[in-house]
Length: 213
Image 1 (cartoon, rainbow, N blue to C red):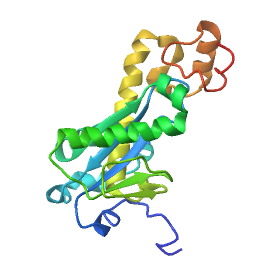
Image 2 (image 1 turned 180 degrees about the vertical axis):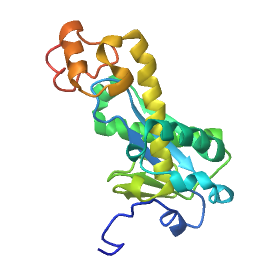
Image 3 (image 1 turned 180 degrees about the horizontal axis):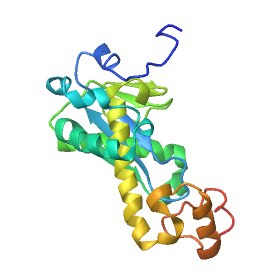
Image 4 (image 1 turned 60 degrees about the vertical axis):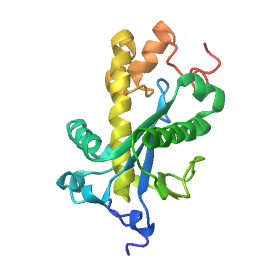
């Protein structure tokens, strides 16, 4: 199958090179869980950093071990421009998960712009939908975390940051197993809800919570 029809197994800078100026990648994590925020990251990899050895190991976060994600997380933060944004469970319930995800992406982009002296020409956004961004160009890339190193880097920052948040919340609410299920509807999580009810961190608009609490 030709490269035009199949997604590359290793992300690179092909899509970034389509634009003349700096490009950032945006990805999210946490659309499906029953608890916790939806979280997005925005990453720009400066040209002077694009030959760093660690980038050869960057992949879609779901394809990496937790230990490898943690190592790359630190390297990405050290060598890139980045921002983190999130939408709370309350915002998810109010806006719906689609619009809350776009809000988290927009917040991630603004966070990067506020913290770093950079004016991106474009954003590459994982998925089919593009948030309202203060940039000249934006492009949606289905399975972008497999295709763009900027998006793949953002996927790692988003995943590790959210997992850490859920691990901290687990300390106060251990019955749900958030330290290892990250808020997804596992058997332990569902059993915890059945026995102990829900917390302020649960999404009341999600089944099976909706209509039962």
